[in-house]
Amino acid sequence: MKKCLVFMWMLALTGCGYNTLQGGDENIKAAWAEVLNQYQRRADLIPNLVNVVKGYAAHEKDVLTTVTAARAKVGAIQATPELVNDEQAFKQFLAAQAKMTSAIARLLAVAENYPRLKADGMFRDLQAQLEGTENRIAVARNRYIEAIKEYNIAVRSFPSNLTAMVFGHKPRPSFTVADEKAISAPPKVDFAAPPLAPAGSQ
Image (cartoon, rainbow, N blue to C red):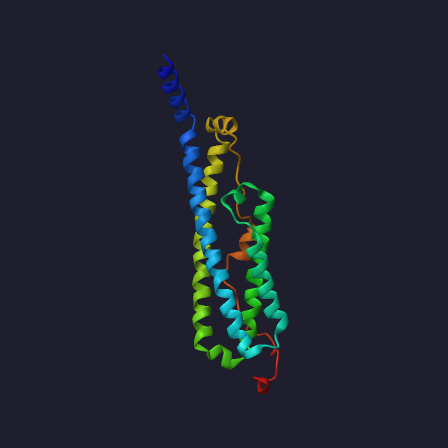
């Protein structure tokens, strides 16, 4: 009798979307792990990029400091899988990544004023790696958004919403339109920017 009740309970859970919710949760964790992996890849490139720029433009201290500080702020956030359950922490993480993107864009813009830096093989290689990483971030983020969408639909849809309430499943935060604009595109270089130092100062 007891086994029969357990079997009926398991059957009821299956029919009410329990397995769908569990699968969705695992998909979110996997997608989020890939987002973090690509953001970490970007962060790992920053010290080398800063050092190369410093070799040609050490006096651009504000730009170099901004990039270093932005990287430190990103690194200070505990980007655990649980972060996606905390909307406030999630927003702070996205804001820190947006600042990182902005700081990188400024750093690359500085390079436009230093022909020798632009011609440096290591700088070109790091820039190519950075652009590739930004593309990977975009792909990983889109997969995460899709995983969140499917999960949130299950959490809000009947009858799986009843199962979600029983087991404490709630909608998860995703990237907003503002976040997408801030962090989706690879850093752009402003070719129209005025020179920051005379050509003879290189």
